[in-house]
Length: 199
Image 1 (cartoon, rainbow, N blue to C red):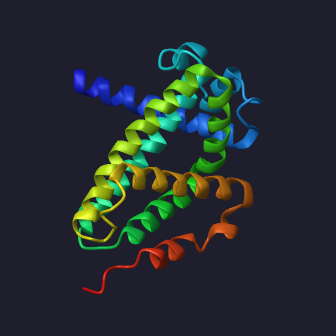
Image 2: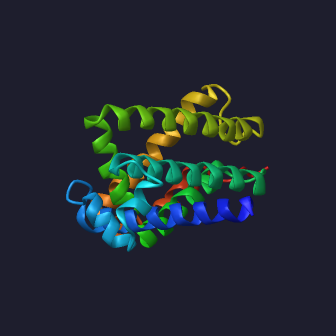
Image 3: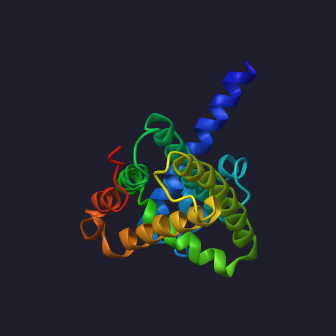
């Protein structure tokens, strides 16, 4: 019984987040009120507040989910293609971001949330924690590619992870501001920048 209850809570929480993504993508962060989120989800205020204390918590939860998905996808690609190229792993990450953006406007929501992180210290602190965790995860992925000599051993794994985050964040910003067509060739460019080794 408790397991069923936990599954229900997880599903309800994800349902609310999906509704929030749609509302934020359509109207923007500031123009979307909690009342709008209740209406989008088709739930009462009490049903939503049972999971989130306010809009800031919803934004942080969406960002956490996005970063967790990107980290998990990079780990999975690395495990599946241990002898593959770093460019292929990054291209797969970008293709996942493209797909998520088509589904729920991920890029636009991401840019709005980053802007909010500069204004709100609570969201800023949450972002700092999330980026630190993502950098650590990516450093592990980078280190694996360094061991196979797919990436240079000279720079630290942490510094290369920082550059990787910059690439992904820059891609998301361009996707949000310029649209999918403007960045459609990014996966191919990443594969070309870091091709699979000939050996």
